[in-house]
Amino acid sequence: MKTFFFPSALLFSILLFSISAVAEKASEEWQNTTITDATIKKIQESKYEYKKCVGEQMQKPTYLKMDSRNATDEIIKHCEPVLTKIREVYLAEKVPGVIADRHLRQIRMQVTRNALQGLLFEQASRKAGQP
Image (cartoon, rainbow, N blue to C red; front, side, top):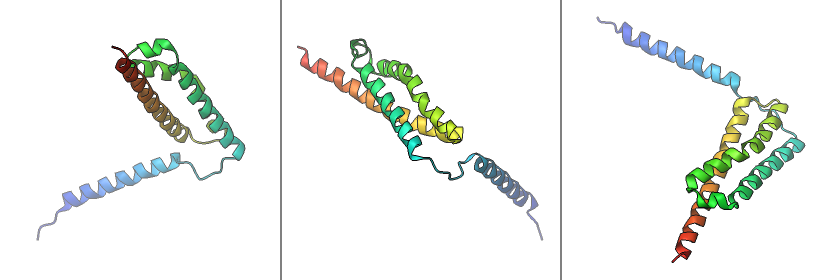
């Protein structure tokens, strides 16, 4: 009778490793606390300021003359300090940095997509209007 000790030991060690990895991630997860209405309002105001900054920068003629991808990159870099206010609000509420960064990344990506789409549309409409 043959025993397959090696494959079962390998499977067992992989299982232990994956359990320890999940346990490590669980310690970094946010433990279902509540954020006050005042904090949510601060986050929304900061998000509005960020979108406003991006919108104002998009109106500048220098960005309209640039390649749309480069212009979007410059606009996002210019408005990044406004976005960090949201992170400060999260950290003041003792939200883990991982969660705050995830939300900031989501906001940044959404605004970047919208800005790029707007600049592409603006450039396309200018080219279509030219003889």
